[in-house]
Length: 231
View 1 (cartoon, helix red, strand yellow):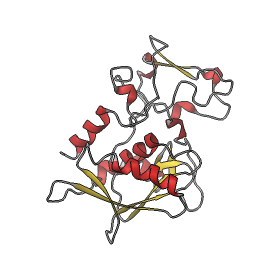
View 2 (cartoon, one colour):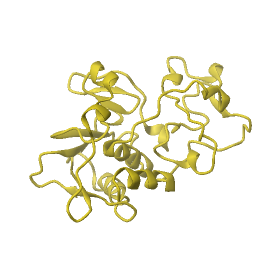
View 3 (tube, one colour):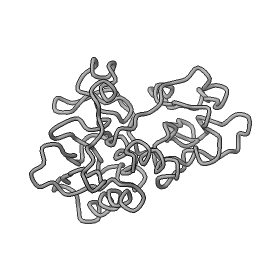
View 4 (spheres, helix red, strand yellow):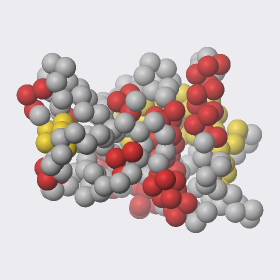
């Protein structure tokens, strides 16, 4: 399902710079890791809850809106995060169908776009994935030990896809539960961007290990949110 996260590094006139599915205002913003440099967590209220206001654009159908709302509500029972419809709050998520699936990382201030394209992004896992970005979770950077855990089958990748820009791995890649995380950078399945219906990636040493198949948040994802926000 997470193959619906659009990989790109371009923007139209009215869109932010998007690398993979992370939005930035500009190239300098990308290089500075703004979430770390300015602080990006949403504030906690006196009742211990973290209220994150949102608006959902009117161009979604009722079925599409229900998918988005289900993703928002999925955080309520397992974390202290509460996504609430915006009234007059200054900072809020503006959920809309832009080009692809993307989000800024963490609280940015004022209105911040979270894009869930009607053509390919409206899956429960993808909604959760982008919301995790909005809460402050980024992808890991590419690691030098990637090739110890995954083999990229270059000959099978569609021409024009620079797949390795988006494949990020950690030592936990093939450990219990880590490959079922919707926030893990390896959100692409075995046949992602294949040009010949053959696999583009296979795990090492066991090529049969499943990955990139998460359909909802894992316990690891939930634990990370609760640790970050001290729920």
